[in-house]
Length: 71
Image 1: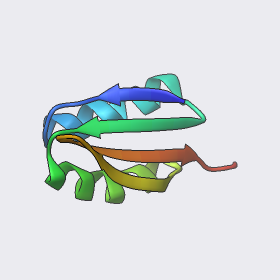
Image 2: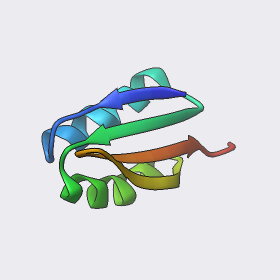
Image 3: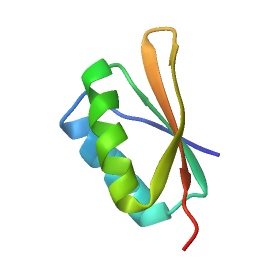
């Protein structure tokens, strides 16, 4: 599983999308300090064929785990 730490939105969601477009990992955990960014990622990731598996807090970070869909 790839782990990506990104800043708050909007920069964080843009960096997360750039990462998954470039690397196309099977599973990815995106860590961000911005809870609002989690909401944006929940909307954006499915547009790139990634489905949310889990969302949780890890200390001061929020983590969004996603898995690439089958094509």
